[in-house]
Amino acid sequence: MTIATTDLIETTATTGAASPLSAAEQEQLITAHIPLVGHIVRDMLTRVPNHVHRDDLTSGGLTALVTAARSFDPERGIPFHRFATTRIRGALLDELRALDWASRSVRSRARQADTAREQLMNTLGRTPTPAELAAALGTTADDLHNTSNDVQRAVVLSLQGFAAGTAEDMVTERTPGPEETLLRREQIGYLHHAIEALPERLRKVVAEYYLDERPMTEIAAELGVTESRVSQLRSEALALLKDGMNAQLDPDLLAAQERPDGCVAKRRASYYASIAERSTVHSRLQHTTPQGMPVRSAA
Image (cartoon, rainbow, N blue to C red; front, side):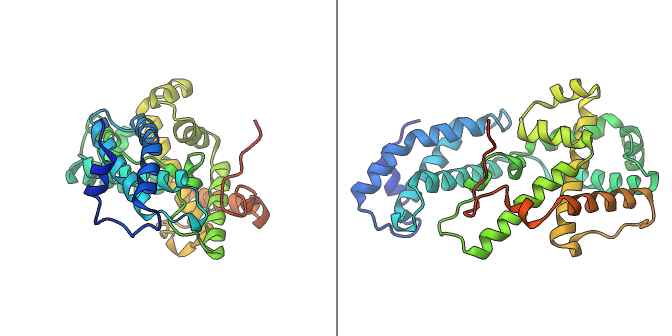
């Protein structure tokens, strides 16, 4: 898809703050970075459902590139490549959210399933089987699996917080202050420790699905379970990660356990303690540079 840069500038003439750069300098930046849009779009297409079209994303990405050029200020010290990447990715995610086709009824059923699963975990002291969960919801295991598939196909924003290099993508237009940078570094550090503290099976699913981006079918085959079971394990891991981080950063956000003395509550408490035990200020901050950039491990 080819769009003249001058046409793009006209279409966004009322968007964004004025740039200290001249129109010629802006057009030069746009022209030089059009391949960047194509690269980001190609990368994004590998992570989204097949019904998402390249042209839809490319159009949004090119418009974001022009907007970035119009508002770019070199004196802020952020390279234009990084600044534009943040803008383009944000525009593509907005476009994907707009294309999200999951109906409210699908999402409502998914929420009901999550609530029922949590209640059964508290009652049974373990993760319920698909049949048990389906019985509690008054449906069949096949319908439950179909609902899960519908939601997964509709999800166009994966867990980017676990992706390598995400901290770079979070650079905003302004330079974050020391407190904001430190808080973000703390969050990233706690996330690393929360993943490390997961039970081995859950940690493997998170690492392979989100970090290695392996298909669920491959993970299921390697673990010797069904795709539905891998989906269950993933949901359980994400719930634990969320609560594990909240336990360290904001305990008030943790939901009260129906059975505080039950085995589920005890396992969760043990998980929270495991995160706290391995986490120190030094260990949390060592995952990022003083500027908040991820520390690359040696190959």
